[in-house]
Amino acid sequence: MPNVEKHRKMSEELKGKRIKCISMNDEYPVESGELGTVDLVDDMGTIHVNWDNGRTIGLVPEEDKYELI
Image 1 (cartoon, rainbow, N blue to C red):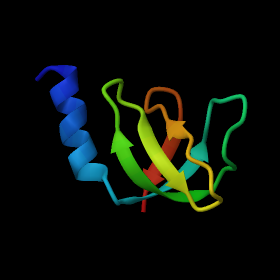
Image 2 (cartoon, one colour):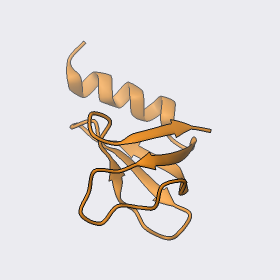
Image 3 (cartoon, rainbow, N blue to C red):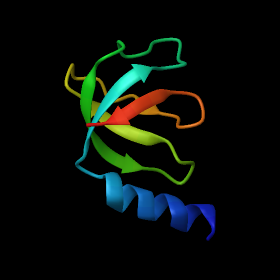
Image 4 (cartoon, rainbow, N blue to C red):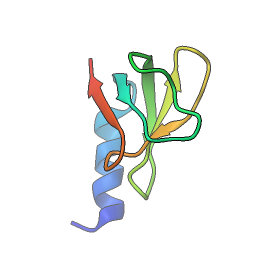
């Protein structure tokens, strides 16, 4: 399955799900333990999250650790 189609399917499955950040490899990460709601998964596979603290930074599955709750 091409990546775009794979990511579209992931987006459909994850949209609206609650997620918890375990760790984020970013210069300005959200705190470990922060909760949010998945908005979408883009064509690159980044999981875009509306964090409960008001931020909207995405998770990169190959670099960041998270869990669905």
